[in-house]
Length: 244
Image 1 (cartoon, one colour):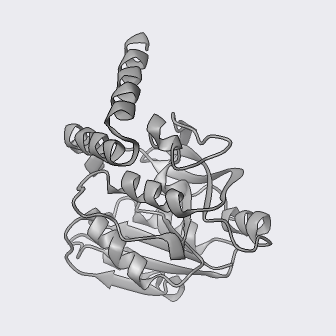
Image 2 (cartoon, rainbow, N blue to C red; image 1 turned 90 degrees about the vertical axis):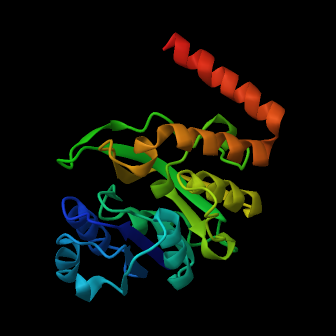
């Protein structure tokens, strides 16, 4: 089983090395590492160069945004699965890919989606908790009615199911992408593992543009689940927020 690990970065000198160490330090050998850099102007590329012997493809050029860069990575991937481990994020353990391969390698065909849980880290690299939304025991494409229950970094898509990201969405194309992949997947496999450590530093595109992101998510949910269902679920979100 081969994994295509894709890292998207831009001016990420402060956090890129923890990701490089994590990906290149995985015990599972059958993987390729693809880095798509948006022509960084800081020392990101200098740091990446230290790991060049363990990087299969490096592209550094201007792009049209995060999801355009992700599409570049998808086009270059050759593994059975594609997964995104962006700057600052890392695998939870050095054996994460090995553990996943041990659980799923015997399936024929391979699961359409492999997923797990996500821990949260700060800029110091310290784990301080678990992601608020946790994956359900049995995931399907309707699960995301209740929010993005699986973090993008903990969502492994079989490459033949992974269509390009829809660039009409600037902030939430990952939600739409995951739903589209799940719709095509016959089997979605829960590893019951913490598979990713996600850097939550409050500076991401989605955080900075929260209102636009929420509007996009509403449009995505309406597209996939219908207006009535989307309105009902958003009403419940509002009630839940009030009680908190």
